[in-house]
Length: 588
Image 1 (cartoon, rainbow, N blue to C red):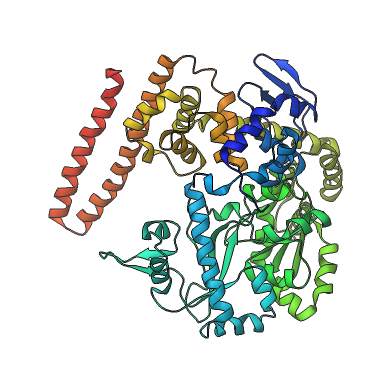
Image 2 (tube, rainbow, N blue to C red):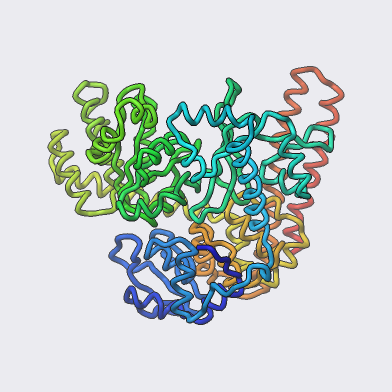
């Protein structure tokens, strides 16, 4: 989508479209108190847990956690990107979004970061294609069987060996060093007001989101320097556990094929893509996460995971099973011959051989159960242990037909009567469900309660801001949402949802909106907020005390008497500070 849509236009679309009317075109809803309830379209359920709040313009499912506004619903229901959902809903609202003038839109921090990464992307890309020094990177691509056409399609680049080549280039473009440092392009020298480049002498891979925005970079060394691969640090716009490399280019191929091939790393991805296996994505230096599966589910429900042919690859394949089953997806798996990775396999055996393996991929749950059976038959594990392992995975299967099939099959494999196995699975599901509920209750953190309070009584954000405690909130989606409310003073739900088009943030916001019944009035809310602030302070102090106890012990062991005395004084001061914060409860 080549145009930019302002927050004003997004809010206008939402203002013209009633979320209740929109969702009722897809499913049946009944009034229940102040909201409407129905069966969730995003997971199997018999008891309705899908709620729509007409007044706030949000939906939330208390069964699977899906939530958001009209855009979030259409994105999930129709497997669309945010931009595609905007295009569709703008037509329903009768708004021509292509006439929006980007120059009149206030630039957000994210816009600035995207623009800066785009500038650097183009700079590195030019150096790869045109500079003499970039010849080493071009040679490396050639040796790996990758053409310059692939380099152009994915904007591959080259970071030169100079310590501050990029830093000087950015200075010539009048880019503030603080912004470049914040997203990890440059690093500040210790005790000096000077900067050096993070990436030097590396083949560069721009990391882009599904809409093509440059989030960060990965760089492969062209020498023997360690690490072999270096990625941008996590930032406001880049979280490796939420990004799948190449999805911006592969998503249409995945939709058409109805299948996504998942590999690990840039080179494996590019090897498959250049071999015309274009329905492929790659994880980047991290295990597959729930955010990855949620992202993939927008485009297909048939993932095929390719793992290297070694013991580590086999173990990694088993770790992803839980992640997929939590989203109600049964993944397929390809285990390559020992010692091979996808790139080397294609190079030796060719595209057609890999395609045959992909077409013959087995369900990962079948692979898992067969592995348990093999270990049982080889007397590596007992029958009880084998049954426990099978029951554990079967309780996570959400499809009752699938579960029934595997209960019958497992009963035959392990010599257990089907009704006995069914009873074990049923008990395991109950324990698992009760455990999840208990964990959810325990995890009702202070930061989550703060968010619920601020969403219901935005005026209290001024009080919260005055206490300067936002840095005490752990990093994550909740902190980002609270920062929008408190720092950027976004005081209405519609604007807040506009700022977060990602699924996790919208789900947190929608759940918080539906969970404010216990925050009855502003006086009660203020008292609760003060208590939250006090507990955040106490938690921060306790963490400092824990660290200082270790430092005191270390100073004592090393017989650093003056350091030990100073730390003990600071420790006592902190204890007094803790007492003062504890006394704030009495002052209230």
